[in-house]
Structures are given as structure tokens and as C-alpha cells.
Image 1 (spheres, rainbow, N blue to C red):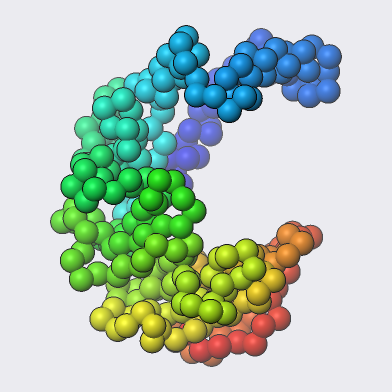
Image 2: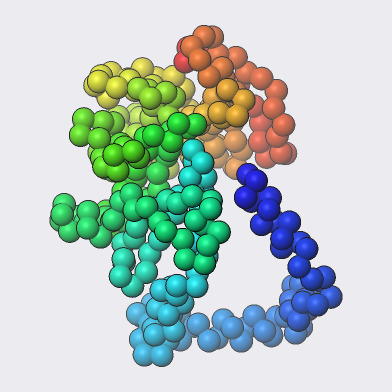
Length: 289
């Protein structure tokens, strides 16, 4: 958080709005702004609007932008380390890597490679696409890595050892599905996935969230939270800063049903929480977590 606040402070301190040569673009309905937007759209419309693959100068320019070394490597902070996923012309599928804050401040940081997705795809003969990772907090010792075949919504989930920098041989693993996962402890994860008939919503996402303990069959994981078929999905996330567990189920019409539970075992109970007009606390019966 301190890094983010520092960047914001730096941005706000550099110059005043009157020095911005593009301030007129703030007038979103202004004639000049609209004409500018139409012109920029026309430049990109040639191959893209017709569904054609960019070629020639257009393709060269797009690749130069995507492969530019001057891109900012955006990071997330876990266990005092800065994590980043990076793609360029030499690493088309990407590198999952990390560094320290001290290194990140340098013009050319030294990165520690955790996972080379190009090498993994070649070794396993799979069309892997990075879909993110759920890192165990606050220890930052394990992660649940999500890999997609060809960029599909469905992903394979595999446990990854951040210290040994390799997948855990007999770790948590989910077959390809539209799954959701989050850590409860080193040996327990909340999981939502396809458990067969009746386990998915009408949108094709998990309808139940279960507590899966290491070394036990996934099929025997008990249900700890359940949504309705008309919901978008049901899932559980852990809010570590307050030692609580948040469970949520986005419902039809944009409503978000949610309940806040104790992080440890015990009777679940609903608690009032701040919410927007489109969010409300779940009225589902409490279950043991």
C-alpha cells in the first residue's frame, strides 16, 4: 500500500491541470473531443472492424507497442516481494516473476523468474495461457496458479511452491472448469468448481463453495456456502486484514448478496457492512465454516 500511495502522491505533485495540453478531452461531449475520438477510431478500424488480422505497417506498430521494453511492469505485493507477469517478443506466453522494492526502483530491475510459461507449454505440449494466481497470505509461500487452454474461461488450477519455484507434486489441483479458489490455511482452500449436475448456476459458474482439506478427495469436500441457480456465481474470499471471511454471490439484476463470517471455525453470522445501492447483505441461512 505504501508503494501505491507514493506513486499517487508523485502524480499529483507534478504540474497543474492547466499545463495539460489535452485537458480539452475532459469535455467528453465537446465537438473537438468527439472529432478527435472519431479520427482515432478510424485509424484502428481498417483491419480490426472487419475481423482481419492486422498486417503491414499496422501489425508492425501494434507489435512494437506490445513488445516495448519501456512498458511499466505493474506489480502486486505479497510477503514483501513485488510480483509481475511479463510478456514480450522473446516470451510470447509470458514470465511470472518477482523482485524487491529496492530492485524495482532501479532503471533495470533484476527479476527472479518463478515460472516460464513458454517453457512449460513446450514441456507439457499444452497451449497454456496465464490466468492469474492466488497467493497464500501473509506467508506468501504457496500459490494456486490458474492456467487456461488457449485463453478459454475455464482454467486448470495447480498448487505452486513459491520457495522451491515449482509445482507441488501432490498438491491441490483442479481439472479444467470455471473454478474459483481462495486460501483458508496452508492445508485448506475454499473451492467452487463443477461438481456435476446441479453444482453450476445458469451462467455456467460454481453455485456452491466448499472447504477442501489437503489429502482428502475433492468430491468429499463439504459445502459451506450455496447460491441459487439464477445467481451469476457463488464464492468465498478471505479478508485477512480483519481476520474475517467474505462470501458473496452476484445475483441476477446486478445485486451482490454477501455475508461476512468469522475466519475460524464457529457459527457463521451475518454482520452489517457498508454497501452501495446495488449491493445488499445475504439472507441465506448460516452454515458452519
